Length: 102
Picture 1: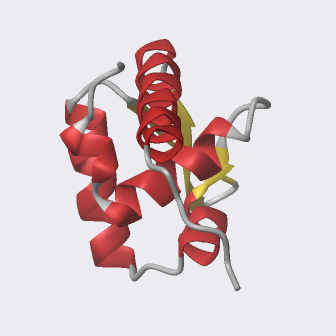
Picture 2: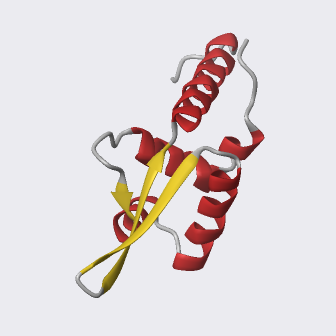
Picture 3: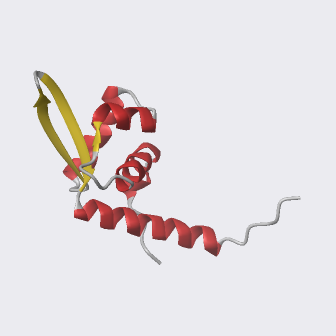
């Protein structure tokens, strides 16, 4: 059985990782990710810092004209960690004998 990744398991970080995992063309800009995961600027920023410190997320800051832009993407390590965590969740769900809905 794959192992639980405590960093990814937190609900908002799981949403962040899932959203970023689906993007392969240069990542997602901060405002779009914020809408997808339904988080505040501060909360999202805090969780992104945690994921960046773990080596799971790359944060790129630049300017478009004079306007700042923040782009976020999973690193190779982040992609591997997310796949492993999803495999763990699948194993947990499949190990449980769920009763049929009536």
